[in-house]
Amino acid sequence: MVHKVRPSDVRKVGYCPTMYFFDRYLALKAPLTIRLKALWGRFLHTIHALIRLGWVNERLIKVPVERLGITIVGKPDSFRVIEKERKVIIEEFKSHKAPRGSSPLVFHGAWLSDALQLMTYALMFKASTNYEPELIVRYIDKAVKIPYDEVLLLRYIELLKNISEGVFPEPTWVTPNKCRRCPYKEICPYSPYRKIELRGFNIENSE
Ligand code: SF4
Image (cartoon, rainbow, N blue to C red; front, side, top):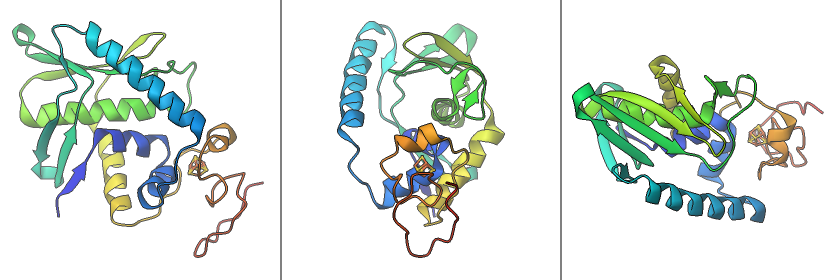
């Protein structure tokens, strides 16, 4: 079976695998504040694409990676091939700020979820061209250049494949602040705000 992998889904798994499971199988409507934020983000993305003249913006690309049994399908925000240097610069624009300090959710100065999304695009280019990818996450306050870490990326792609086969995952990292904003906080067995017991789960509430 060939799994379809979307870089935006790898990003969601990087943020919280459990939330991705709920999104995939329950798909509750996000709260209004989150939907408004998404609209604002969309608007900023359009501006970003307009100022990235000379770059390829939001082109849909589909690349099979046979050795992994996956096909990656996605639209990088912007990319630019530098023929002379045999490299491709891939840039993801984010309408939020870069992290400050370090935590398990931070990867070389970028949010881990954003870094994983960008690395999935890099894998896409590596599998289909011989250009070396250079990866940049452009936050509203600064641009962060990140390295490509295939071992880390493949761990999350494997997790994504397992979830798409119905495995209910543990969150990789839980913080009360993250769970407070989650639309599944009242049903998630790992949430400190859990109110409803889902059948089949037997996980102690941490509160
Ligand atoms: S409540 Fe927390 S652990 Fe559960 S899905 Fe949401 S963010 Fe993840």
